[in-house]
Length: 296
Image (tube, rainbow, N blue to C red):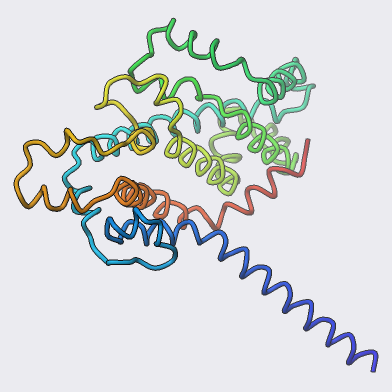
């Protein structure tokens, strides 16, 4: 009877866990499904707020309008440039900071001082106004570097990778020293190849962070052609002036398009690069997060 009761309790627990997980998954997917439905619905349904999980008045008018939006694709290219440039810079700085900070104080004098400075920078920000004035003072306003350099040192990523380096066996250092290997050889030929999970994790953080950032673009970029994609999406409004100079077919498509539906289409297209990148790095992601957070 006790065994039977334990099995029944286990089944009830497993069922409850499955229901909770399915509910959480649905709540996580609902915004995406709703955005897809809004992007594929007609203007009347979207404007009335009738769209939930399924499109109403199915149409591709929003995507047809999007294909005519040259500013969207220009901003898309700017965001790609930002991700490539900013991601590469963050990767380089993260590795070059995390490796020496992972050494013991006996090998890196002043290591604790630098570590406290890094932690302090992660906890306390310099403030929005000093940040803006600094960027303006060095002449970065309205350039791609304004989107890249202010966030070039991702402190959280540095700490994550540093902890991963510290989790590697110390015997690697001793064996390399006996063979006459220097710090650069140790980093490039031993630590980096062994740290693919952590490197994939910090790379994913950098890529997603740069791709989704929009607030700095609102403050630092003035020229429309230099505006990153998320900034453009967040600031987009369908203006009546856009209706001028269009042929009858384009005018028909535009008149059947709502701001909300068009923005939903833009959000869906903007998600494509992340959806393509994440599956490639996902198998390293959890492993890198766990191993990079177990040491101080």
